[in-house]
Image 1: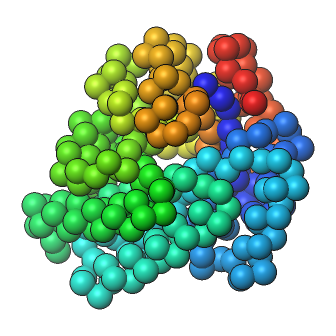
Image 2 (image 1 turned 135 degrees about the vertical axis):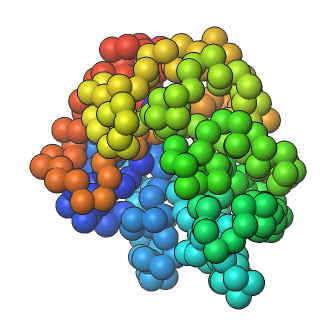
Image 3 (image 1 turned 90 degrees about the vertical axis):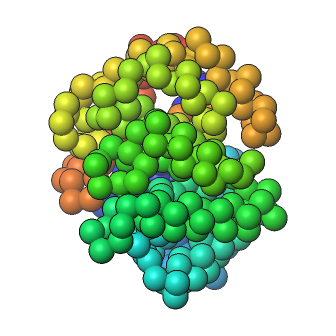
Length: 286
């Protein structure tokens, strides 16, 4: 297993551009990066020249982008037919952009319940939309990774609902991004990772208060990070990455939430890295 970092922390702290955030990650010794398409790296944020500069920066710094976080503009579970086509157009553009940067994974979530849409219909809309996204991604050799969000208003908010959505979408390139901090918030222990071991393509480090999603410095919250890492190692998760064309699982730091006041983003990353390397010396940056 390797350690990566999501670029969003520098955007939250100081509104840093994607190009500048990549430079900060490389300066801290990272090889693997996740690109935050919701904050500063989505098709809506970048001109053609800026997209090219991102590609050049990745190449210049020797960074390997591993996962692209990008959500549909409209809630897939409640979108109208017209809005769903807009969602699909945007994510197709995002998939093409990801490929141009050397990415083979795009992360999204299934959407949120809406009181105006009956739950069976909302689930059906979301699953059908995800099938269409996966079908386009498959033509580009890209995997779509769903991430459970540990709130009751999300369709996929824990491992069982993720497994159900995976079964209903039923696409070979539909996989799972597991966030270790989210597991704690949804009250799922390390042993429960075994049930989804063949679906995991990527992971995030995050840490939180017991009952609040805070994305604080790793090791300062309630997440059982060491236990989750031990469980992944016991599952020999790196060997299971072969089905996705990878040699090992990358787990990336997800730090900060919008409107956080982060005086020094580099310090947050350094402290998180020091903690993880202390509790799991078998993990490395490269």
